[in-house]
Length: 383
Image (cartoon, rainbow, N blue to C red; front, side, top):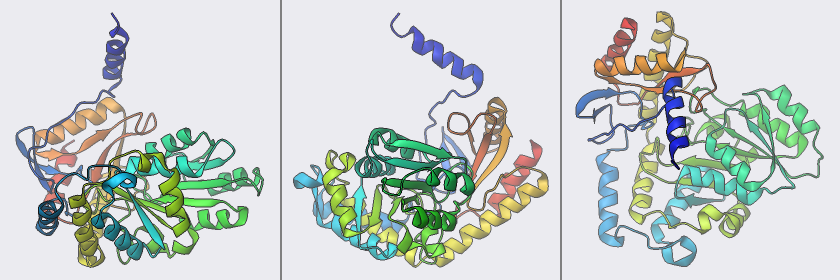
């Protein structure tokens, strides 16, 4: 009897087309994976540069396991702070051209921990309406006042800033590349408004890191805005093919987070083998201009062909390419029919995206071939 309400809610989600299940992958990540025992083309992974199964990165991790073991044993403030962590932070700060970096165990923990540490109930956070759930949860944990502006709407953001006192601590936070729409934030306009109204700026580079910028530093690097962004956050689990996250900024920011960020203080440190693997991944990213060119060309080709067929790819300008379906049940059906043709594309439905905007979320990688892309396009034509 105690769980009847849980079952009822699950039934409701099924009827609305938003019930979720897990699918099992029995292979490394790549352009092809083994999904539920079937070999399929994979257009759902965030492994943008194809590094998740890279031999150089695996070798670095295995060597570090031999030297440091697997687990880090404790939080970094106890006895879990190891050389590989600090060397990775130095590499990240060098790539991001900031004074310092601080590692977190995941992107979710970074966003919740950074915002919770910096803001409190006397502060205001201004957040793009399509920001990642971890950003919203970080604001909630901080107890700060939340002001959400419509996606990319700079006039509304300016009006909200004008209504706040200059002395009030305020933070504008935005994804740089939005994970479900694949578009870029108007970052130049955001930093201009922040300077005018004395607000801090935090940018989540999760889907831009390794993908955008001359060295793979993200949208901040691409636009040359490093000096105007107070906190650059990002993950090592997507283009870097590893795991973990970072916050890059000043020495003061690093020390402040070490002392006040609960998700940093009260969690076991990243395994040192992963930190060393990420260092190798960063080197590949910095030197990986050809990988990025392949990635961008694949994304341009697929997006253009989809639009010619007649699909709505929204405002995507990155390797994340949504195909708008609107109805959740229809999106799930299309995903199932593609899988029958040997192509894995995940259906994205509310509450991950707003009602009426269910979609197929295509993600392209640098390792996809033109034949792969054409196979996907031909399968979509049949739908």
